[in-house]
Image (cartoon, rainbow, N blue to C red; front, top):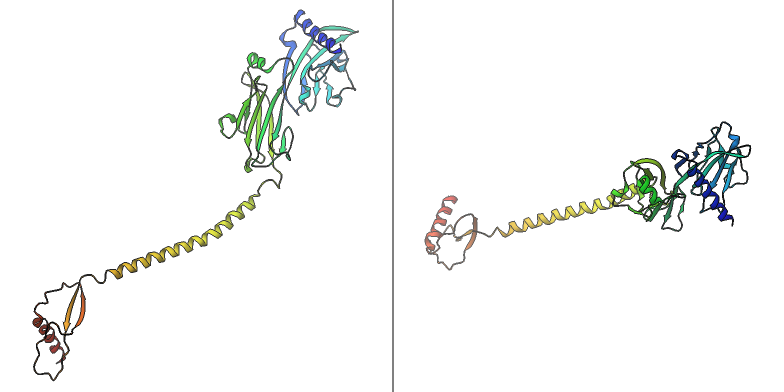
Length: 348
C-alpha cells in the first residue's frame, strides 16, 4: 500500500508540473561520477531557504519517498545525513556520490504550510566503474585495484539512471559511453582491448590481459551527450611490490644471460676458425703431387776410366722438380750422359 501511495505521489508531482506549464528549465539532468561531489540547483527557490524541502525518489532502492531537507533543515535520520548540506541558494549538495544516489530529486517551496509554485525536478545520473579480476585473491575498488600482471581483467562502466532508460537517452540526447586511455584515444582502436556494450547502452565493459608495464596505467570511462563530455571515471591499475618484477632484477637477468652466452659464442668462433684452417692445409697437401718430372742419376767412381753403358732397368734415384714437364725417357743414354756431364764439370 505504501508503495502504491509513493508511486501515486510521484505521478501527481510530474502531472502537476505538466498541467501548470512547467518548462524544461524545471527539469534538469545532472551527470556525475561516483566519488565526486555534486550540486543540485533549486530553480524555484525563494529568498528564504527556510521554505525549501528536498525530496528523493528511487523506485529501485527505496520503497517510499525520502525527505532529505525539510523547511531548510537537514533530516538527521537519513542514511546520507553526513553527506548532505543546503547551499545558500537553496541548492542540495551531496558529498562523495555513490551509485545508490542516482534518482529523482524534487525541490518544493512552502509558505505558511502552502506549496508555492511547481516542483523543480532534478534527475541525477551516476557513472560508476567496477572491476572483475580473474584472480580470486585480488582486491578491487572503484578507482584503484591491486591485481597481478598476466591475468585477465574486466572493467564494467555502468550508468545508473532513474526514469529514463539509457536507450531513450541515446536517442533523445545522443548519450554515448566509451573507454579511452590517458591520451584520450578510444581503446576500440587497439586490438589489445575487447569493448562490449549492453543491449540498452547503459553499460560498457573493457577486457584485457594485464602486462607488467600496466602498473599505474590509467583508463577512463567517458560519458558524452551530443559529443559534449559530461563526466568520466578514472581507473588506475596498481600492482603490489611482490606482484611485479623489479627493473633491477630484469637488468641482472639480462646481464647474467649475456655473460653466459658470450664465452660460448667466442669458443664456437675459435673452433670454426680452426676447422677452416685445417681444411685449407689438407687442400694444399693434396695439390703437391700434381705435374712432377722424374730424373735418374747414376753413382760413379773417380777411378772409373771407361763409362759403362747404362741400361734403362738399372737402379736409379729420382728427384722431383715442380712445374717442369716430363720428357721422353726412351733414350736413356742421352739422359744419363747429360746428367754425368754436368756433374763432372762441378767436381773439377
